[in-house]
Length: 258
View (spheres, rainbow, N blue to C red):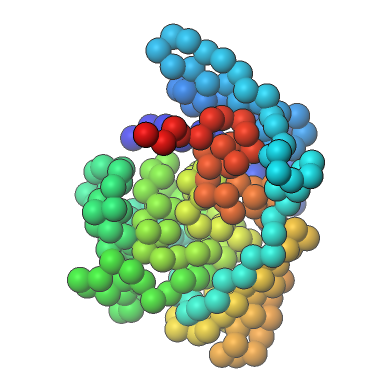
């Protein structure tokens, strides 16, 4: 299914040592983001029924210039659910459970109940217990290439709907990272070392995020791990996704209240 969400217009963070690729404009049928050297948009172009208009980037009137473009101190605390490498979107949400994109709370609860239900039988611990719609694990820790597979936005959405706040992985599939930012459902954080080999499902952990990077503390083992800075994507996720961020920054109008 083709993605209808806007995507980011710069190369996404990666643990690879390769130089960043040139900027490539991403496209959406109804929204186009124009940027310079930063992810933060300089303008947004909207089109609807043949008409189009551009809204220049604006700073919220109630704050100083750029005050909302910085990721505030963000902390997550809870139990972790540990996975390994190459967790694909069919393991995160099986295709037959992602036939519609949730548009109401009932549909959101249904997709939440199936989060990570496609894991092989060797995973004896369920992320969401049968009959439940919320997971007791608020932080997912994984290895390399998390979120590979299809481009379905359902993958980060089902994790967020089930109560996950962040994923800490060694590397990500680019499309999962983009969809996480666009939907604002979970923070896709990169670890500097292979944390998944040193944590166990059920460990109590805390993630502390700053603009310069983050820190994961495993209170069960007493170990700490540095996390890479999420960069300009942080404020977008913090706002609740690309559209929420655009409204917050005054780039598109907020929905009118009847």
